[in-house]
Image (cartoon, rainbow, N blue to C red; front, top):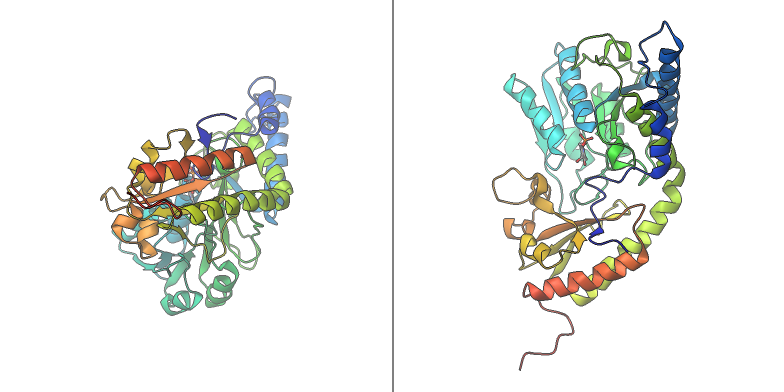
Length: 389
Ligand code: PLP
């Protein structure tokens, strides 16, 4: 067992060795530029990009022509939100999103707000779920785009995408989903959405590559590029393509989707065992979103009465994440947890455990033992502790 035990797979995943193997030739032998249409170096690279695009389309139930490669989800989200806003500004200047979205979505919407757009940020319930009725109430004839994430990166809670799509799409607004955390963990398809975003490094592919799905039919989505130049990606994203990265993304998504059912069952069993053991031992432990549909690998734990940074000091041989990693810098704690109604103290008492492809039962046993010891060290009660004499 390797220590620290890695339980931060929602932050990033190691690149699967099978993926690395597929990528390697494209750094050396097949280094051509896919835009070099005059010779075989270019053709080989272009063929690899074509195959990867097909793999990604297949993984998402899309057409290859609907996939645009980007440097990751942040870029794809920015491209979707800003590019759609530019293309549809005549329709209206209103977007809807949700308070517990990733900062990439919230900040891109904030950029529109600075240009005079109206942004509605919908509240969520205690599990972090947005109500489709709230989406319906917020929609106006001016609404261009609704952005709702498929799965939350901190709590793993899934949004009711299908119900939201049934409300949004008949009203003529476009529906964007950030599926960065969902791909490979739960079944994901573009069936009900107009735009979808995913990233290589969250599903055992390389960092620095991602994709944007944009519907081409019923309706055909129009979007302006974020990066102009070179005409690559049908003019949607200028810049020489990252061929090894794209090959890696294609291979990673194909594997992740193929193995998703068995991996989900395995990880859910490990995650549940960890949660049950810790809940049994620690009366002050609360798990955010436990009652909702969640990713099988994620557990957002609130150790009421402790500070997450102190707890982490007591569990240095575990690599976990304080829920506040992406917080606003206000010191108040994670915006995701605050949106679910946690107090600032509880938000700062929270840690995210995210399991993944290389997590073992042995690691989970070790984790249970270490977390209980750290909680005890931070002054939390144990359920069966002897009364102090
Ligand atoms: N969206 C979600 C839900 C994420 O978890 C992340 C990664 O932290 C991103 C977007 C950004 O992804 P990337 O690192 O590919 O830019």
